[in-house]
Amino acid sequence: MQNQIQAAARRLAECRKLVVLTGAGVSKESGIPTFREAQEGLWAQYDPMEMATQEGYLRNPPLVWRWYEYRFGMVEAAQPNPGHRAIADLEQILPQVTVVTQNIDGLHQVAGSTDVVELHGSIRRFKCLSERHTGFTRADFADQAEIPPHCPRCGDLLRPEVVWFGENLPMDALSRAFDLAETCDAMLVVGTSGAVQPAASLPFLARRAGAVVIDVNTERDEIACVSHIFLQGPGGEVLPALVAVLRVASRGDLG
Ligand code: BV8
Image 1 (tube, protein in one colour):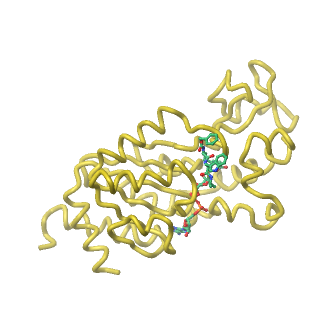
Image 2 (cartoon, helix red, strand yellow; image 1 turned 90 degrees about the vertical axis):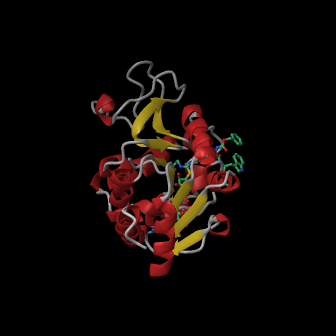
Image 3 (cartoon, protein in one colour; image 1 turned 180 degrees about the horizontal axis):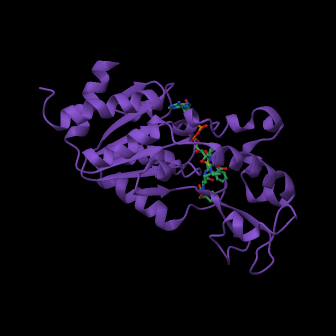
């Protein structure tokens, strides 16, 4: 593995524009279950495809709202792990680093990453079903006892400001992600199964555009087949090791 990490660090050391694409695996060591693991225990009887859709929400608003409350509780209790912090540290080493994340937990920002594209929105923000009013935080409906709460502006049902299956991604986030994938010279992919589109197409676009693709995952995923280097292990261990070697490589001391 050390040789692989050195090879990855050498490639990154020459990088002018890095994209770090992350999925639920990067937050696993912060105690947040991956998306499909979030169905363990109490929620195992529900299908995420059912819960993370507008149809599922309309079928049973209190159930879906409570699933997000359950996940929000874990996000609130979570701290960035060494993987998040190593990604944030990349900004001190390389000229341009952008994080493109599928995650809704906001932990990259808490860890110090300053340029984060949230492809699937945020569990920390809320909007009304009609989407006329967006950007609410929990403080905006703290006085409401009803589950789910209603929009303080128009009375419509509130929902998390996340992208559900069958919904388009925020246009500005998606177009920026596509542009970055096609113009970066390296893409570091961390903790994604590569199962969800259009996020999963980004590494393919980057590779086709000539970028080096490095994949970090505890197990081989859909991205491994398009990556130049596959670093198998938990992000919280692999990324700090990679950044430590990159610091040396970027000074040209690796030889
Ligand atoms: C769209 C927000 C256009 C919510 C999420 C039929 C009808 C409609 C659409 C479709 C359809 N068929 C296909 C589609 C497209 C669909 C899709 O891709 N479906 C898949 C499942 C087949 N996509 C969409 O619907 C998207 N919109 O296409 O719009 C459109 C419009 C109308 C009709 C058609 C098309 C919207 C997709 C966004 C869905 N919302 N999240 C929420 O989170 O509550 S996606 C959800 O999955 C999470 O964001 C999660 O992050 C994401 C992807 O999963 P991963 O992040 O990869 O997580 P996962 O658990 O899968 O894997 C974790 C990985 O980490 C594993 O590989 C594991 O090995 C690794 N790991 C574990 N521990 C560690 C680790 N790695 C490193 N370190 C560790 N310690």
